Length: 102
Image (cartoon, helix red, strand yellow):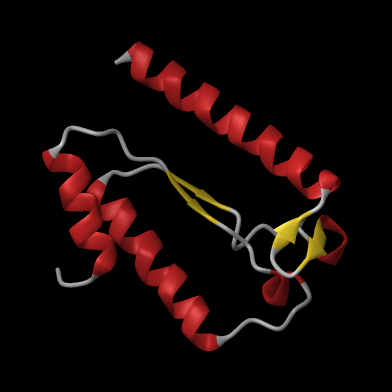
């Protein structure tokens, strides 16, 4: 496929670099004002990563991330960073356990 994501993914694969993708939730989505183009980009990205077997942490669709998790712009505050850090730790722990079992 053409595009930035497939090209970048192919470069990582060629270099034998493990990929884990984080799709962030921007503040506009958190306050209920998503843009159609963002929604479509995320949907296309999730489809691509799924087809390629690349693990994804999808924060974009995480409705637990609300306005109170942001400091300024799309930057998370301490509460948002703690939430995302916990999710990332759980996700990576599960991924490592799965890889160890295979």
